[in-house]
Image 1 (cartoon, rainbow, N blue to C red):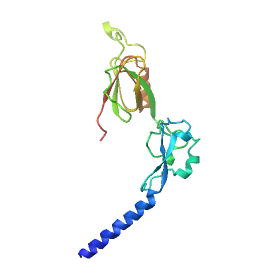
Image 2 (cartoon, rainbow, N blue to C red):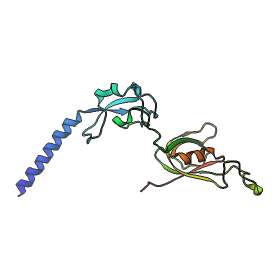
Image 3 (cartoon, one colour):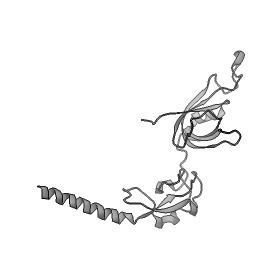
Image 4 (cartoon, rainbow, N blue to C red):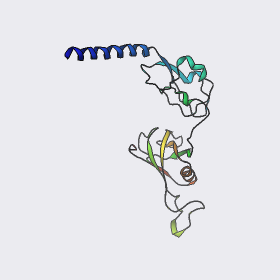
Length: 195
Protein backbone atom coordinates (compact mmCIF):
# COMPACT_ATOMS: atom_id res chain seq x y z
CA UNK A 1 0.00 0.00 0.00
CA UNK A 2 2.85 2.39 0.87
CA UNK A 3 4.48 1.65 -2.49
CA UNK A 4 1.21 2.50 -4.26
CA UNK A 5 0.94 5.85 -2.44
CA UNK A 6 4.57 6.66 -3.30
CA UNK A 7 3.96 5.74 -6.94
CA UNK A 8 0.91 8.04 -7.12
CA UNK A 9 2.84 10.91 -5.48
CA UNK A 10 5.79 10.43 -7.83
CA UNK A 11 3.45 10.46 -10.85
CA UNK A 12 1.71 13.65 -9.69
CA UNK A 13 5.03 15.42 -9.04
CA UNK A 14 6.39 14.34 -12.43
CA UNK A 15 3.34 15.57 -14.34
CA UNK A 16 3.35 18.82 -12.36
CA UNK A 17 7.03 19.44 -13.19
CA UNK A 18 6.52 18.66 -16.88
CA UNK A 19 3.49 20.98 -17.05
CA UNK A 20 5.35 23.74 -15.19
CA UNK A 21 8.33 23.52 -17.56
CA UNK A 22 6.07 23.54 -20.61
CA UNK A 23 4.20 26.67 -19.47
CA UNK A 24 7.27 28.44 -18.01
CA UNK A 25 8.38 29.33 -21.52
CA UNK A 26 5.03 30.83 -22.50
CA UNK A 27 5.19 34.57 -23.03
CA UNK A 28 2.22 36.90 -22.70
CA UNK A 29 1.50 40.61 -22.84
CA UNK A 30 1.20 42.68 -19.67
CA UNK A 31 0.33 46.34 -19.21
CA UNK A 32 3.44 48.54 -18.86
CA UNK A 33 1.67 51.94 -18.58
CA UNK A 34 -1.91 52.79 -17.59
CA UNK A 35 -4.25 53.02 -20.59
CA UNK A 36 -7.70 54.63 -20.16
CA UNK A 37 -10.74 53.01 -21.79
CA UNK A 38 -11.15 54.19 -25.38
CA UNK A 39 -7.48 55.14 -25.78
CA UNK A 40 -5.33 53.61 -28.50
CA UNK A 41 -2.88 51.05 -27.12
CA UNK A 42 0.67 51.98 -28.13
CA UNK A 43 3.71 49.72 -28.36
CA UNK A 44 5.20 51.09 -25.12
CA UNK A 45 1.94 50.44 -23.23
CA UNK A 46 2.55 46.68 -23.21
CA UNK A 47 5.49 44.47 -22.33
CA UNK A 48 6.25 40.76 -22.55
CA UNK A 49 6.20 38.60 -19.41
CA UNK A 50 6.58 34.91 -18.73
CA UNK A 51 3.72 33.24 -16.93
CA UNK A 52 3.81 29.68 -15.65
CA UNK A 53 0.52 27.83 -16.19
CA UNK A 54 -2.01 30.51 -17.17
CA UNK A 55 -4.89 28.28 -15.97
CA UNK A 56 -6.96 28.65 -19.12
CA UNK A 57 -7.28 32.45 -19.05
CA UNK A 58 -7.73 34.11 -22.44
CA UNK A 59 -4.35 35.83 -22.17
CA UNK A 60 -2.88 37.52 -25.24
CA UNK A 61 0.34 35.81 -26.29
CA UNK A 62 3.46 37.84 -27.04
CA UNK A 63 3.30 36.63 -30.64
CA UNK A 64 -0.06 38.44 -31.02
CA UNK A 65 1.30 41.87 -30.04
CA UNK A 66 0.31 43.30 -33.45
CA UNK A 67 -3.33 42.39 -32.70
CA UNK A 68 -3.27 44.62 -29.60
CA UNK A 69 -1.04 47.59 -30.52
CA UNK A 70 -3.01 50.17 -32.48
CA UNK A 71 -6.41 49.00 -31.19
CA UNK A 72 -8.46 50.65 -28.46
CA UNK A 73 -8.72 49.58 -24.84
CA UNK A 74 -12.25 48.41 -24.06
CA UNK A 75 -11.72 49.00 -20.33
CA UNK A 76 -9.04 50.83 -18.33
CA UNK A 77 -5.79 48.84 -18.37
CA UNK A 78 -3.90 48.81 -15.08
CA UNK A 79 -0.11 48.58 -14.86
CA UNK A 80 1.11 45.05 -14.16
CA UNK A 81 -2.08 43.29 -15.20
CA UNK A 82 -1.99 40.65 -17.92
CA UNK A 83 -3.75 41.57 -21.16
CA UNK A 84 -6.88 39.52 -21.81
CA UNK A 85 -8.44 39.48 -25.29
CA UNK A 86 -11.76 40.92 -24.03
CA UNK A 87 -9.93 44.08 -22.86
CA UNK A 88 -9.17 45.08 -26.46
CA UNK A 89 -11.83 46.42 -28.82
CA UNK A 90 -14.64 48.94 -28.79
CA UNK A 91 -14.90 50.82 -25.50
CA UNK A 92 -17.07 49.04 -22.94
CA UNK A 93 -16.32 51.50 -20.16
CA UNK A 94 -18.13 52.59 -18.15
CA UNK A 95 -20.45 49.57 -18.00
CA UNK A 96 -24.07 50.01 -19.07
CA UNK A 97 -26.05 51.96 -16.48
CA UNK A 98 -22.92 53.34 -14.85
CA UNK A 99 -21.03 56.61 -15.24
CA UNK A 100 -17.60 57.99 -14.40
CA UNK A 101 -17.28 61.42 -12.78
CA UNK A 102 -14.47 63.40 -11.16
CA UNK A 103 -14.93 65.28 -7.91
CA UNK A 104 -12.65 67.73 -6.11
CA UNK A 105 -12.13 66.76 -2.49
CA UNK A 106 -10.65 69.27 -0.04
CA UNK A 107 -7.90 68.32 2.39
CA UNK A 108 -9.20 66.25 5.29
CA UNK A 109 -12.43 65.25 3.51
CA UNK A 110 -11.22 61.80 2.35
CA UNK A 111 -9.44 58.93 4.12
CA UNK A 112 -5.65 59.01 3.85
CA UNK A 113 -4.41 56.78 1.07
CA UNK A 114 -7.76 56.30 -0.65
CA UNK A 115 -6.90 54.48 -3.87
CA UNK A 116 -8.33 52.81 -6.96
CA UNK A 117 -10.74 50.00 -6.15
CA UNK A 118 -11.91 51.40 -2.81
CA UNK A 119 -15.68 51.49 -2.20
CA UNK A 120 -16.76 54.86 -0.85
CA UNK A 121 -19.85 56.79 0.14
CA UNK A 122 -19.84 60.17 -1.60
CA UNK A 123 -21.46 62.94 0.43
CA UNK A 124 -22.03 66.42 -0.99
CA UNK A 125 -23.04 68.86 1.75
CA UNK A 126 -25.35 71.66 0.59
CA UNK A 127 -23.67 74.96 -0.20
CA UNK A 128 -23.55 77.19 2.87
CA UNK A 129 -26.56 79.46 3.14
CA UNK A 130 -28.80 77.24 0.98
CA UNK A 131 -31.18 76.45 3.80
CA UNK A 132 -30.45 79.20 6.29
CA UNK A 133 -33.31 81.40 7.49
CA UNK A 134 -35.89 79.12 5.91
CA UNK A 135 -34.58 79.82 2.39
CA UNK A 136 -35.31 77.53 -0.49
CA UNK A 137 -32.50 75.41 -1.89
CA UNK A 138 -31.39 76.33 -5.41
CA UNK A 139 -33.28 74.78 -8.32
CA UNK A 140 -32.59 71.05 -8.81
CA UNK A 141 -31.24 70.63 -5.29
CA UNK A 142 -33.04 69.10 -2.33
CA UNK A 143 -32.42 69.99 1.30
CA UNK A 144 -29.70 67.91 2.93
CA UNK A 145 -26.63 66.21 1.56
CA UNK A 146 -26.47 64.16 -1.64
CA UNK A 147 -25.35 60.60 -0.98
CA UNK A 148 -24.15 57.89 -3.36
CA UNK A 149 -22.05 54.72 -3.19
CA UNK A 150 -19.18 54.58 -5.69
CA UNK A 151 -15.92 52.84 -6.54
CA UNK A 152 -12.72 54.90 -6.80
CA UNK A 153 -11.18 54.67 -10.27
CA UNK A 154 -8.24 56.97 -9.45
CA UNK A 155 -7.17 59.59 -6.93
CA UNK A 156 -4.58 62.24 -7.77
CA UNK A 157 -3.29 65.27 -5.91
CA UNK A 158 -5.33 68.44 -6.45
CA UNK A 159 -3.43 71.46 -7.68
CA UNK A 160 -4.95 74.29 -5.68
CA UNK A 161 -4.55 73.17 -2.04
CA UNK A 162 -2.08 70.91 -0.24
CA UNK A 163 -3.83 67.66 0.64
CA UNK A 164 -6.69 68.15 -1.82
CA UNK A 165 -7.55 65.39 -4.29
CA UNK A 166 -9.23 64.94 -7.62
CA UNK A 167 -11.03 61.60 -7.34
CA UNK A 168 -12.52 59.79 -10.33
CA UNK A 169 -15.51 57.65 -9.35
CA UNK A 170 -17.60 54.91 -10.96
CA UNK A 171 -21.24 54.88 -9.86
CA UNK A 172 -24.79 54.44 -11.11
CA UNK A 173 -25.52 56.94 -13.91
CA UNK A 174 -28.50 58.53 -12.14
CA UNK A 175 -26.53 59.01 -8.92
CA UNK A 176 -23.58 60.40 -10.91
CA UNK A 177 -25.81 63.12 -12.38
CA UNK A 178 -27.16 64.00 -8.92
CA UNK A 179 -23.67 64.21 -7.39
CA UNK A 180 -22.24 66.17 -10.35
CA UNK A 181 -25.08 68.71 -10.25
CA UNK A 182 -24.97 69.22 -6.47
CA UNK A 183 -23.10 72.22 -5.15
CA UNK A 184 -21.16 72.07 -1.92
CA UNK A 185 -18.16 70.32 -0.40
CA UNK A 186 -17.54 66.66 -1.22
CA UNK A 187 -16.55 64.17 1.48
CA UNK A 188 -15.66 60.51 0.96
CA UNK A 189 -16.27 57.75 3.49
CA UNK A 190 -14.42 54.52 2.73
CA UNK A 191 -16.43 51.31 3.11
CA UNK A 192 -15.19 47.83 3.91
CA UNK A 193 -15.15 45.05 1.30
CA UNK A 194 -18.52 44.19 -0.26
CA UNK A 195 -19.47 40.73 0.99
